[in-house]
Length: 479
Ligand code: P53
Image (tube, rainbow, N blue to C red; front, side, top):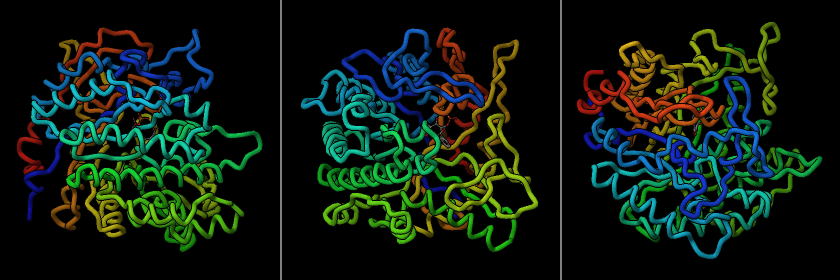
């Protein structure tokens, strides 16, 4: 086979809190994303756990108002030829506090309408259950995913939506980029999926492992349950894959890169293989971590392995143990230095651009799990310029995407990787997760809104719109 499969899912990806807005309508509760302020390039967002403060700007409250404008946006997606749209369900539209006894009908109806609108326009919904947000009340009342009860709340939420949409949604994912919390020093990453409340003087790493295990159990339960609800469901995990290279051929560099990679692979190892890998059991033993994981729960992990691996790919990284070269930080786990890879370029936000890394990780992951893969995020966050004639000539975005799609195609046609589809991130401009900016743009469709929240929210096509439309119509034959 020289071409991509005929049924390849070309699409686009977004997430509820980054696109919908409507943060306090239709009975919706407060989510962890609603208390994140706007940061800037290089400046972190603040998390105001106490609630909404008067003097702060919260970019997700309105986002791009997809909640009210989805019909118009779906017409543009249809025109582009998208076969799939990856988005998420906002848990707080369904269970405003997470532990409510009854679901909120207005929230359920919103997603019914959204999925109907997609399907009638020939677009398959691909749905993440928790994309970097959970009900804020679960943080206050249970400390987030460190508490075992939150497993039950998540499963209950999943049961409600999987039952309701069993004839509308076939492709599901449980937790977005579940492995990002492996970098436990970064508050944003232990906040949104897990909403962990850390107590004074606690060992963060041990608590993160506990929350991660709880999420992995919750995910496994949902995979099992979903297959009972509809045996045709395809239920995957969602990982952030950042291949980390040894900077030199020094054997210790190779070992350090392996350790850094394993720290993040841990999550998909459990999702796909159904057990905790030895390298993590040994770490817990050596550090004296008492992780609460019963033998019944170990059975659940084994019984709820995923159908496919969904993942994001943006960049690669490099580490070294060499003493004569500088680095920008030390990795906690391998004690190696992170440093810039001189062989690749970087975006304005310092993300290292590495198309070959995509082919490499596709091969590595396919060999590791022998499961179908799905690239559910890839894209180029950049400052766009509106020309005098109103056009946006985003050739740099086309270049990035083209080079990545070329490597993706090689992985499929030359290396034999089984790949379900490709849904580039931020198909329409949305709020950045990392910085809360609007001006870190990924879209093929421009949205008139700036970092301060000013703008008409008007949509317009960038040059990349027609480029992608043509690519889809030819199934990337000419690439
Ligand atoms: P933003 C870090 C590394 C790789 C992917 O990110 C990441 C992150 C988190 O910052 O997140 C994913 O908006 C995530 C999306 C996010 C997208 O990448 O910071 O799943 O929600 O928007 C891009 O540029």
